[in-house]
Image 1 (cartoon, helix red, strand yellow):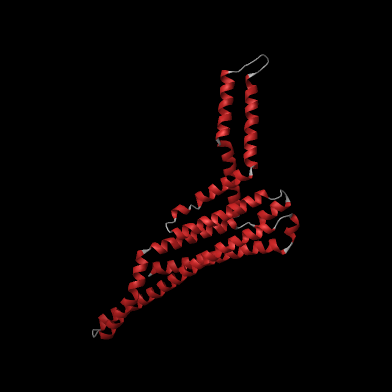
Image 2 (cartoon, rainbow, N blue to C red):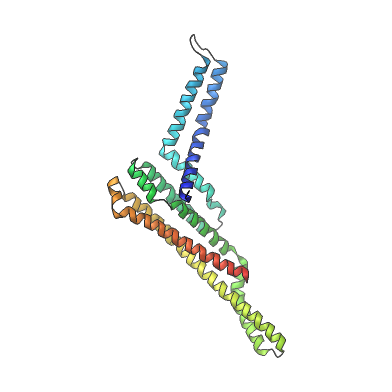
Length: 272
C-alpha cells in the first residue's frame, strides 16, 4: 500500500471514529438504553426492543450524515494531519508558519475534492493529487531540520571559530621546530580544514533547504490554483491534470533529493 493510500485509509478511519463517538451518537445510545429500561411499554402494543430499532436507525443516520458531510470530513482529516505534523513542535515562528500554511493548503485541496462532482471527476482529482500527503510530510521534516539547525549553538560556534583556528594552526605548523609536534599539528590542521569544509557544505545545504521550502510552498499554492481550474470531467482529459501530477511528483522528488543531501552532510559531520 502506498503512503498516500495508507493516509487516506487512516483518514476514513478517523472520520468513522468521529461519527461514532460524536456527542449526538453518545446521546442517542444513552437515550435508547434509558427508554428501553425505564419505559419499555409506553402504550399497548409497544415492545421494549422497538426503542432499540429506533436507536439503531438514528445511529446509522448520524454516522451516515457525518461521513457524507464535506465540512465534517475536511475538519476531521485536517485535525488528523495537524496531530501528525504538529506545527507546535517547531520553535521557529518562520518555519512553524510554513508548516501551518502547507497544512492549510492541504485542507483546502481536500475540501475542494470532496465538493467536486462524485464519480469520474472526483476519482481523477484524487489520483491527480496523490502524493500531496507525502509532500506535506517532507515539508514538515524539512522545517524541523531547519528549525534544529537554526537553534544549534554548537554549529554556530564551530562556524565562527573554525577559520580562526585554521589560521592559528597554520602559523604553528610553520613555526614549529620539533618534527613530532609539527606532524601532530599538521594532522590537526588537516582535520580542522575538513571540518570547515563540511561546515560550509552544511551551511550551504541549509540555505538551499530554506529556499526550497519557500519554493515548495509556492508550488503547493500553484497546485491549489490549478486544481480550481478543473471544473468538470471534461477538463480531466486535457494536459492540465497531467501537469498537476507532474508538478506534485517533481516537488516530492526535489524534497527527497534535498533530504538525502542533508542526511549525507549530517553523516559527514558526525564522522568528523
